[in-house]
Amino acid sequence: MRKAHIVRNTRETKIVMDLNLDGEGKADISTGIGFFDHMLNSFARHGFFDLTVKVEGDLEVDTHHTIEDTGIVLGMAIKEAVGKKEGIKRYGSVILPMDEALLLCALDLCGRPYLVYDLTLDREYVGDLETEMIKEFFYAVSYAGEMNLHVKQFSGMNNHHIIEGAFKAFGKALDEAVSIDNRIQGVLSTKGSL
Image 1 (cartoon, rainbow, N blue to C red):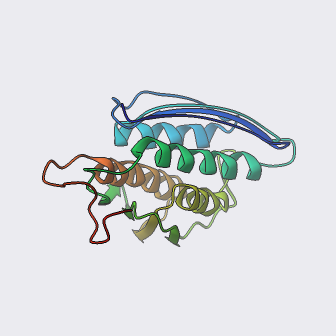
Image 2 (spheres, helix red, strand yellow; image 1 turned 45 degrees about the vertical axis):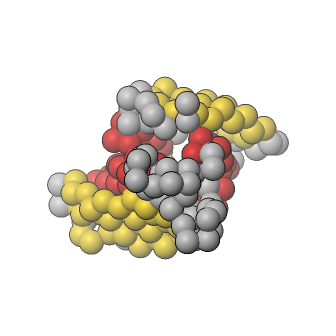
């Protein structure tokens, strides 16, 4: 079973996460940030991942530590759940429409972290989430998960649609990347390791 259970406690956050890459899209999310919970639910549902996230963060300060640390833990969980990466497609990409917004997410579970982020958000908040934290979340996921991650906006004016489209696209691209291809012997790399 391709699952991970991660517990991470710091002075700023306490996080418990369970991830099943071979799930049905069931999510139980509680971060204390309503819109962020909605985004993580969208990621899980559209990626067909079972995801449980419980976060106690210092929200009296702001949302930064909660969102960034959740990204770190999600990256750690993805890395643990894929294990040695034998038989996986490694690459995943999708172009996803959400009303007027069109988003691309492409990723490579290559073991080399890198983020290319190109979203244009012109509001400080969507709900109770600071929009500048979207980039911090994806950065944290990419580095902790050791993946090359591109998130790009082709069109869109509504910040809610842009952000939600990005999370859904990330879920669908990751689902493709972690899927098993029986033609792959070992890992998909000329080096023989990822």
